[in-house]
Length: 112
Image (cartoon, rainbow, N blue to C red; front, side):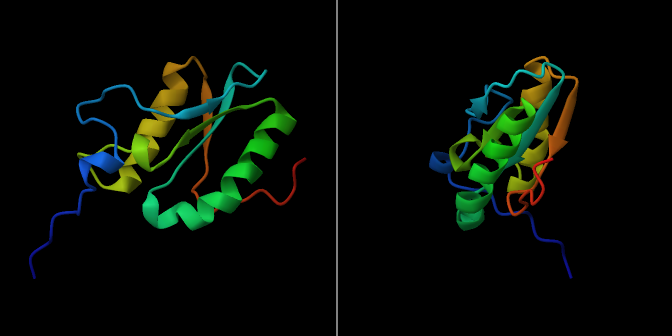
């Protein structure tokens, strides 16, 4: 069968196409070279309600900056999964050398 094109989100649920500034929710940490990043769309909001506070606690404990791209910050011109690149690039563009990506359904069980 033919491959179907990916479904794109309505423009009201995502950031402008063309590489404009993302509307990431950023928590600035004290560790300048390391950052944590995550993103989620409307379908993963139930997971994000649990995982984002967990990621905030982990980032605060370790002094990491945290970059969160929610539904309004995702790129419209590609599938939601490609927003991982946008989230990591946002953190790198902010001056961080390393970015730890975590999917929206991941939580830290050991804060150490």
